[in-house]
Amino acid sequence: MEDKVRQIETEGLQAISSAQNLAALENARIKYLGKKSEFTGLLRSLGTIDPEERPKVGALINEVKTKLEQSLCHKKIVLLQSEQSKKIEEEKIDVSFPGKGIKRGRMHPITQVMNEAKDIFLGLGYEIAEGPDIETEYYNFDGLNIPPDHPSRDMWSTLFVADDVLLRTHTSPVQIRVMKKRKAPLAIIAPGRVYRRDSDATHSPVFHQLEGFLVDKKVTFGDLKGTLTEFLRQMFGEDKKVRFRPSFFPFTEPSAEVDVECMMCKGKGCRLCKGTGWLEILGSGMIDPNVFTAVGYDPEKVSGFAFGMGIERIAMLKYGIDNIRLFFENDLRFLEQF
Ligand code: DAH
Image (cartoon, helix red, strand yellow):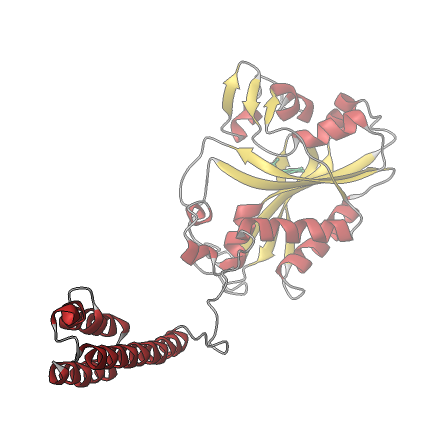
């Protein structure tokens, strides 16, 4: 019996010391000290041996049991420590590792160009006014000297919401709204969305315009030319030539369209400017006396100029974009270039 106990001691200590992890150690404990182990069996059979031998064998069994338990305990601490340090090593954070980049949003190119145009006029002392997208015929047409049966209404492909209610075809109705409410002198810009029944590579049913007008005593065509030339130089570059060309709008007399030297060919003539060397940027003119009368101003006492421009068109020319839909499809590969 003593030999058996010694053999269990040797094997048990060996198994404990060679355990590679906590699971293997637990297996060794069950095998050598567990309830169903050979060792526990020997302990139970103590009663059956010779009473003379019993104290000696009993002491030996206790001694071996203590040794095995101590060895188990010691090994457990060693394994726990090594498992913990392994875990720490694995979970270590490298604080010098570069972080994930945070994606930055940006202004839509149309917003950017609109803001640029607004800033130029704010710098010239203009203030911003707004009007509704849904208008009545009066503000969109009649008040602007465009009577119901007049062919000049054909200049705008209007989207009607109901009889007498329409989506404004231009920002010019803001002129009427502001002048009806306020007295001259006025220097106003009106940015906003406008709508037309129009859709191709350069036309969208919804687009943006910036309207502007100035009313005071003795405002001249020279003031119009000076103001718009300054605006176009700031917008397209000091070196660009600007030209005023006679035109017609019902709400201005005389009227002029304003062209800028083509930025692609520098005036030589190319596909963008259709060989003319010029790009048409905006419409303008001296406010028609009929418009002043409609808002209750005396055309003998005040004069003024007005202008309107399409923001998408300016953005397309500035950045050489040939399809207006790119602005509204929200393809990040396009938008991220601005
Ligand atoms: N409202 C015109 C359009 O949408 C643009 C315009 C032309 C506005 C001349 C004006 C102006 O104020 O004087 O086609």
